[in-house]
Length: 389
Image (cartoon, rainbow, N blue to C red; front, side):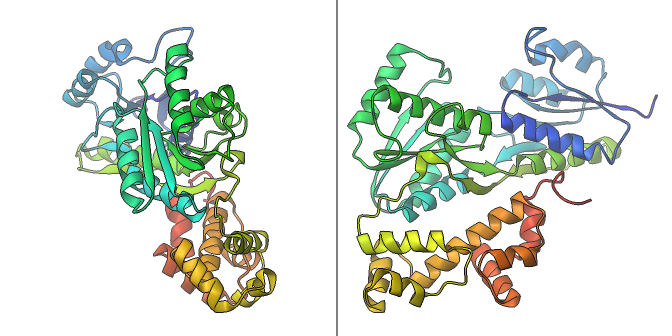
């Protein structure tokens, strides 16, 4: 019994973010069978608060802790204890032995997504009291070098409230249309979507909504279904457990942090539209999207849109800031990246179904666009439970 490690995992279990983190932790437990994991009790027993565990922590009952900490006093209490801990806070950065999202990467990914769809008006909907929301907003705005940007911040409590709903509705009504809006996470995206319905604002025709976390239950409990940026949270859970294990074994606290990165965008009905007004470019993009699994070339698109190569290239460079071939490859590589993370298909198979006839050419292009090889990308972003161990 003395070899059994008592590990306290204080993570929200009702949302995808927390559940994925726990899945990754439990996956690591396959390698350390003598870990005993304690999760927060059901809501009807007691709330998930550090105060309920203070006495046990003071008595060194736990060998390690992984958790979301909301109060500075709770953070200092745990860090001043002798218990090794990997922590995260929604209000502030934790400098060491921590879990945190790549909020800059999330903001940039969202900006690229809306730019590719042709938007020139952009919005951010979140809560500036939450550091991750503020960071995502800053990265999103900074990456948008043109167009108008509008922001709206709510309080932390976003439960139904007539006054709050009216303020959000008035803000949404006053925005220029069409507009692409990034919400700080799926909860805020859902709120905005429901206010749009109440105020008869068309989604996605007038307002295109993108969330973060890809929590399928949240995204599909409102209509239209919400598009969302998926994160490799499960892999981060595995890495957090691995780091905690290292600290517990060596008694050494390395100044390390676990970063949760964006992987792909799960597009649903809330963004299922392109607002590019140029009919030729819009038609070309639709053709690429419909034939993304084929080895299409620029000549195939020219036959479809019936304009000269020079005319099409000039339109793409002016509207999208890239050549037609660059756009084809970008869309193909994004599809490849999604399949690398979501499936166990072989990389060769994925290259074939994404329209590449040469594997060497595929590998070269993937590294050019993603900065790494397909194998390394899969290892970096695919969760451990999806990998074949």
